[in-house]
Amino acid sequence: MTQITEATFAALFEKQAQQTPDHPAVKAGGNLLTYRELDEQANQLAHHLRAQGAGNEDIVAIVMDRSAEVMVSILGVMKAGAAFLPIDPETPEERIRYSLEDSGAKFAVVNERNMTAIGQYEGTIVSLDDGKWRNESKERPSSISGSRNLAYVIYTSGTTGKPKGVQIEHRNLTNYVSWFSEEASLTENDKTVLLSSYAFDLGYTSMFPVLLGGGELHIVQKETYTAPDEIAHYIKEHGITYIKLTPSLFHTIVNTSSFAKDANFESLRLIVLGGEKIIPTDVLAFRKMYGHTEFINHYGPTEATIGAIAGRVDLSDPDTFVKRPTIGRPIANAGALVLNEALKLVPPGASGQLYITGQGLARGYLNRPQLTAERFVENPYSPGSLMYKTGDVVRRLSDGTLAFIGRADDQVKIRGYRIEPKEIETVMLSLSGIQEAVVLAVSEGGLQELCAYYTSDQAIEKAELRKQLSLTLPSHMIPAFFVQVDAIPLTANGKTDRNALPKPNAAQSGGKALPYRRQRLKKAYAAFGRKRLA
Image (cartoon, rainbow, N blue to C red):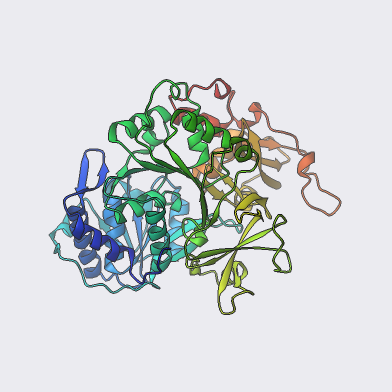
């Protein structure tokens, strides 16, 4: 079992860098950094940040293109004793500005080309392109962080119309990373590739554990990892051994016309699926061609640090797997309680809300004490400790594994992104002419899509709605469909009557034929030629 460690991730990385100094650590395009080079460059940035005044518990925003310098920045911030705030430069400027202001980030590490993304930021800006930081010492700075200091802050969708910052401590991160490194038996021979934005912890299963095992992290451009044929060829060419991705992205890979023709995935020994509900038929289709590849189903909200529940997928009985896929059991030093509304344990087989306990629980929400108190509640079965209320409904089976049933609230997952529909509704209601708005998840072609229903006393162009929303919301939160209705139907108790709302069609996407999200996916997945997406 994974032992609880008081070390920070930076300290664990330094230990690994001493063991494999000349082994490749990070590869991005034509740039390759060995463990020694990554360690030394992170040391230089850490010294530079400290010279600028960065220290313990300070938050440093990272607004970078996908490059090897992303890991230099993350490790540099950690070595400086500060916490990193990852921000995707493609995020709308208004949302970036909010994250910078709400977090109180005093420093920002950026590429020169992303200076405009941070707008009128008034903190200290460190541009990795100007080279000043490279004049600093390559020696490791003295450590000033402990296991209970802040490691990073990630902003997730919020019900109030504004995202909320989740605070993760070093002990949270090292527990997960240590567990996964052991579970996946990572070694110097392993290679992985980041298949999501570094601004969300979905990809941290790839980013951190591989560097603890002496392996190799590959960072590719978004245009590569969202094009199934391109990422398939990349995996083959570079001998990638394990990947973490969403079931949606995996679905597009398995359902390309070239999947059954080209043997591109022989090097993969492990595939980790997480961020949304697994699609069993895709797993079986892949396993049919690559019988040696193992699968892990992976579950965990950001508040529980990357992953809290996981399990190897048992394919010895395919029929049972298709009918009843499970999300697994709690990882090392984590726990899972299935409780009713009175916070009493429900018997095996009965459904209840999932509460997570243990070493992975976040510190709470930044600047949101009331919300923290609502979601991180006292554990009645372990006085003095907390448990996190996930809002997910599960069932504990007789063998101890957990089966996911659904949500107890309106939160949805689209392409692995956790989305609060109320945040989208709040932004819609701020637009001129919108009187009422309801956003729901609908099933389109087997995948979840967002649909916005709204009332207005005037005709509003769907394209204009999308344009206005994109000024505030990131692309994954823009609805695929927009449906104008005369009134939002209500049930007898005054709640939205979802069954009475009309199903969206292609005309309501604002496009000529395909819903907007599908148009984006089709463009990004250029090689993805399935007929039902055409």
